[in-house]
Image (cartoon, rainbow, N blue to C red; front, top):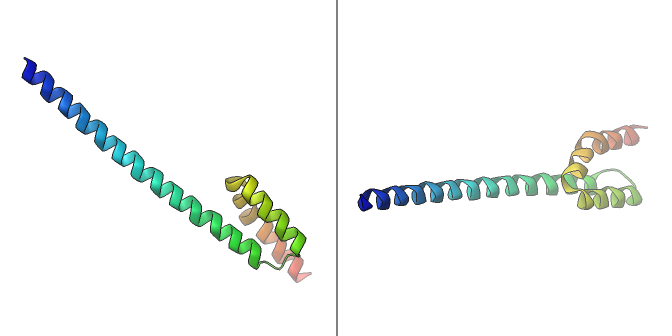
Length: 87
């Protein structure tokens, strides 16, 4: 009977370790995806045709609210920039 308990606990540890590895890999993937998203937004802000003050405001917004700021840039800011440049 003790042998079964040892095998069961070893199997549970292996499953737990596998789950930990998967969660670490997924976390790394999400962090890398976010960093790519964040730096793409920053480079888009800095290369836009906006004035210096507006660029500073967008960069501050992107740093203060990283995910929301980047989303706002892609959905609002970049389109607003194109509209301003055409006008």
